[in-house]
Image (cartoon, rainbow, N blue to C red; front, side):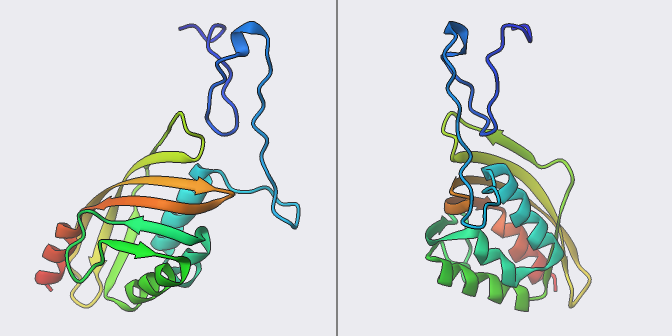
Length: 171
């Protein structure tokens, strides 16, 4: 499809089905109470992986809604398969920050926007290190995030927890 025929992309990543008939369908970007714009799902995801890469574990729960639900279908104990609520998310990240694992997201993370403006699917890779031994590992990830009002309300995290287990077993 030529650029002239393509429907316009809105800031949410949604294409409007009505653009071909002259109807304008803007998606308004809500603002925080201080007037600053809310983060898009893409911006929220990038803030999350950048925070993990920088080791800012104590800030990460602020990206989640009060009643957020995080599911990790591939979790290997002791990692939980389900985390409910911002307080529990904060405790989860606090434990991660106390551990010997460091992560750095590789350049080239892919963010797929969907027909639902709140939902994105991400593909990315972490290069990791076990700081107590210097052992390095690679961890592939796919996340399906629902972000509403700039906060993650749900996340299905398909992290390669087996890679973590192997890295820790080598330590």
